[in-house]
Image (tube, rainbow, N blue to C red; front, side):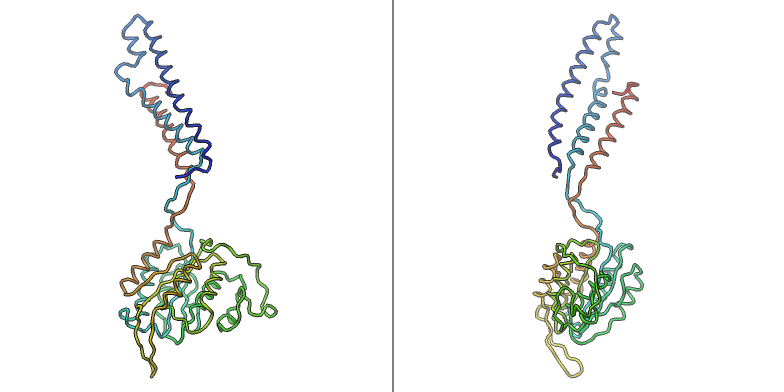
Length: 347
């Protein structure tokens, strides 16, 4: 625990002085009590039979003062709090390589099942959008809190040719920032030169002035991309990751499949599909996020469970002055209440 105003902690040195003052008052009271002729009056004045109980309210009040001074120093601690993220975009690969069976029953079905479990575990107030990508990327479901619509969108996935991981990130960003003037048609081709989402500044409609922010600083949304990572077309995924980083959006990547991969065939052609971990790790690192490896269907489910926890609860450095102030108030009330109950006076 740290303190924003540690200089106020010096005031704690006044507490021993208060203890000495309390002892002085008790001794003075004892001397005055000895002047009484009646022994019963002496006992009453000295509080005989309740010596321990009589010190409890002052002790609690002393602790209350200590808590007040601690609160004034503005203590800060790292604690787990509900995340501020309200929107999550699930970008799921539906390219032909996802038909590989190195993850049972195949990569796509395992991804669909894990995604549905992930959505079911999220708090109901979190919006989720679905982006499906292969040779191009499309929004399968706009961000919504309706879990049934999300499941329906996931069940509609159809395998397609090619893989454009960069396009998936761009479309996800366009979904999160609809007012940034992203030219979706131009970006989908993936062949145009990209410079801050600009393809042709003269023909492109005006957009809001954009100022880059630190990576990972936008805490209202996140992108989770599940893929085997083998880009074959479209936007450079590292350029797309840079755009996400400039907007502070974290892109969590999930690599599905085995490192060695396998050879798949379809409609007379065959190809070797391997997991491109290097690219997926680079995307996550550039956006201040994390990369997760899922070599089996069970691993994939665990990954999504981990992501659910990571996205809904996060550790933050938070000022906890209010907790100390609350403790001080409760101790003060308890000290005063016990004093009135036992001695019919406040301390």
